Image (cartoon, rainbow, N blue to C red; front, side, top):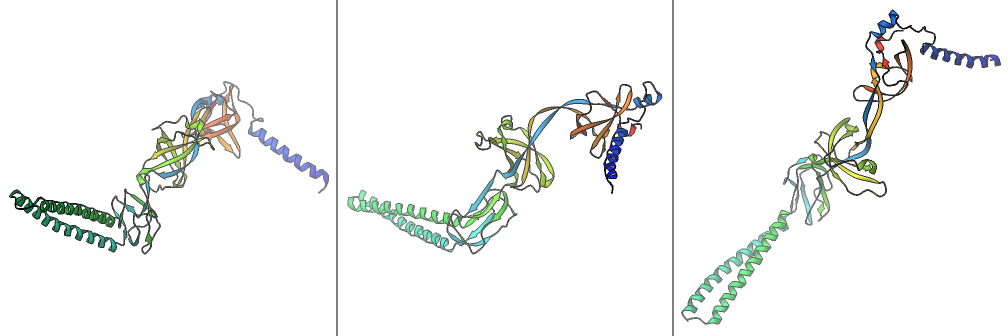
Length: 354
């Protein structure tokens, strides 16, 4: 390829682009004079004015789903695990039996304590009779005071032994009850950390449990936004994994900022939502002020590639105008960043004449 041809190709390409843009801007079209029949027919069609709106703006803050009521279930005694009645994901009610521990030794202690109570009770019954006889004989001056004192002391000693035996029996029954681990709240099992045959140790977790109706959103909000929040304020929460947005209500504002991030911990209560689980990612929408913007219905804009175009009635003629748009709003409106002014009349796309 010779040198003149190499130079001509880029020049020709640029010329084509310039002509295309000029055509789109209607440079080559004759403007319709005011009062012409064509213009009057256009004006008679429905037009919409560009309006100014004060729109609330929000900032999405990363958050996590947590359970307000969550507990780790562990044993209070050292014993071998015989049965575990639940697995991860099971729903349980308060006081449902979750884990059974070996209880033969504990039952033996209960039996021994029960026997001791019965033995002391029999002896105490006999001591009461002896004390009653001693009191009767002493009243008739047939028994010495020292014999009466011995009968009284024997009765009081057995009474104390009975109280001790009853306390030992109560303690043995309490220890036996620890062999059955029950649910402290209504909820759902998150995970189990032991299997039958393992040895349960005091304080070592066996199961984890949470209450599904106590889920809430926890987020660290920068101090500039957090100071404007208040208890019971309603905020929107977006859950990307479930593709849903729900309302939440602030129930806690931790009154101390994190010194590193300069943020406050905000806890917002959620309503019960199906498939919502602790640990899921969420976004808390925090009000960040009011923005003044120009808006126009999105269906009045024609997009051609990366260009956005509208037809505007301007000074007695219809002109094609390039604009720059911003974010789309929930009600079908779109923000106008540049290219239009408040009050400009924009033609519908289907009614724009060529």
